[in-house]
Image 1: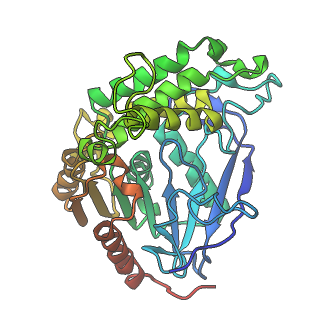
Image 2: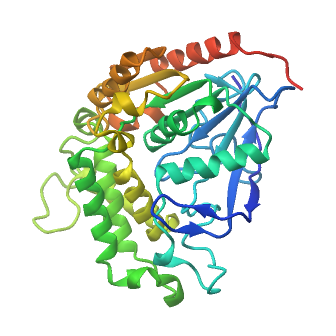
Image 3: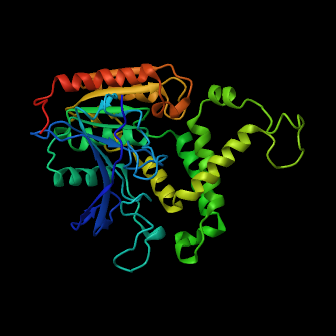
Length: 384
């Protein structure tokens, strides 16, 4: 297997207003995206990859002059990889409200000439999908071979199957959920409150003051990161090991860093606060909270999925306590009730929610086998 190599992002501006689920609208906006592979003659080999909370359009490959800029799902997407770019034309889109290029809080509001900041409208998973559909229209893609995503990306894939049932043949939902539990919403709100209570947040208009609410972002990331790891994984990596244990095998008896896990979480928080936008974090976690396709159907996920037409691949991980296997089984059971074709994989992996990003061969082989099935059923296999 080889890497895609050097890639470059593209941008597309949309002048037609996008009506949002919350009642507002974006008068104009730009979507940043990347593509890998070659679109075939009838444009039937396109696969849309939807990103999770802190990811972006940069799914695979690297940027010129920056060998460390590897895409977030580079182990999944590329020549000879499970999602094989020698066969499929893969698209990664940066969602609205992000801080990685698509129109978001950091960008100028054309109505005021100032950054949107906290005035950027709350967007939902369904709003993202509607924007992605417009990009597909502009690229001439009538129907995707598959729409795929993990975590929040899996929510988007599920929304695609409901909102545009004729526009995808397969829906690939990994380590996801049909809606957040109360516990998950609580974790998200604690993270948001850390940002909102940071004095440097300045009501969301911190850009004008030349500051960043780094302390809030640090804590938000630390809270989130804890939920991505399993207890077993944390125990194996860190246990109760003391930092600098070789030099000093005793506690400091203060509020500094004693344990390796404390050092690790603070490192993750510091790193995150250097590149992620605080308003974006608020927006994306709220989109996670709001997602609940069954809400309009009296809480019935079976009814919500009744209009779907795609075949489904659903995967979960045994130690993922944030989006547990039970939640994936809810999706599977609702699909079975609707007599949809669904493949379900529950993978015994120790890495918690982050397992969907990691190199577990059983997981990779299952995804590879599913895309082999998609390829074998392709209307036109040859590329343009």
